[in-house]
Length: 523
Image (cartoon, rainbow, N blue to C red; front, side, top):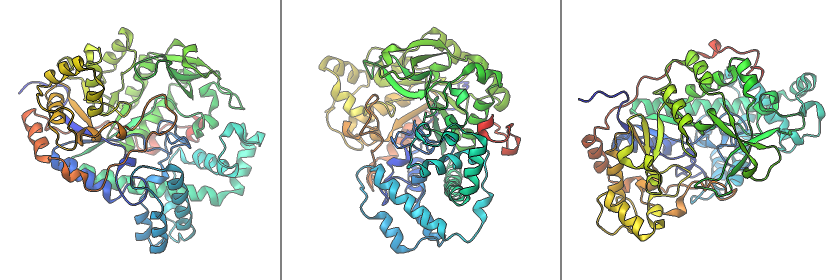
């Protein structure tokens, strides 16, 4: 047996929102358990999802209202029926008028909030009142004030005191709106209850849950509202600079994300407590987490506030290893529990930082055949996570179609495929050839988007970077998992020794051990 630093394993990438089901969006219910059973049956060890934190009105899971609170639309309404908080007619109404083809966020959100409010109005048991994580107070206040002002972002609130987070104004609002705050406590308690049960089931089946943590937080979030000094924002929501990336493979003009960047000097002065507690909380939710946009920890693309194009930005040094030393001191070795998304414009300094942290980076085989030799499968190192594509890529089949004839010929020769490459669907031979190619790499973890396992085309792409609409809507259909040849993938796992499962996770402090100064927003 070869000596390896990391266990060899595998997983499937699919956001929970993409599950099939009767509620217009995937939820933490029967369909999620069914998917875990499928993973287990086919030999996969991990389910990688996109962020499940409370999503903002733009529907992107990377622009969340909270870095901690769970997304309410993921709550399974059937549990509310089991708890006696809604009746059959109300559950039927929740199902009516929603699409089973893709997610229509506006209608799903409206129906889910209505049902949750109905359920809360009938609560007799006070068990939910025990739910009080360190981030809850400011989150619930933020949500309550947003609802009071028709869901406007904090910088558009007409009340100067609330907009500027004046302590007296916030205290007065809290005292006048205790019922609304308790509603949000109930919602987050339900989410936590369902999430914990699902994670326990996954662990019993030998499946780890891989989460995703955006490097930045949304400008329209509880965190920025409460601690704007950490984000170089004034009381009216004017940001000195915003985040993004320069022109790249995905977008010739770069991407202007709009998220405020961090005041790294202040964070360092506070011993990175905000970041320590953020990662502590996220590793209490997931077994493993993908740390998005890793390169910005070395240097980040700083775009002047108010810019409408990323071309105006410039590279600024990030916190570097000082941040990761603080994280390691608090959480121990993170090499098995944190994956670094080291894609984009990567230079020797970023590579050196990744090596010093000991984290695994990412390799995407599509990039390898688009001119980057680091992403050719025979160059994948053990300390990497291999993907056919990510949520930002088109599907494997669509990528093959997009290649010109000569490049396609080279790519198919590489994977050893000689048949009809244009035939898709579950178990299509061209997809199987690429699955075999991915599995035989030395990368310790191989991840495949569900669309690739199903042989789907470009119309099932999850996200197209740089486009503001039409993203995050893809859903699978009921029964499609049964069309996949699970036996084939079980054999791949055996042949390429992807049989291990990561069982040792970082020691995460109990909540009362987390060092805070009152609340999460006062770190």
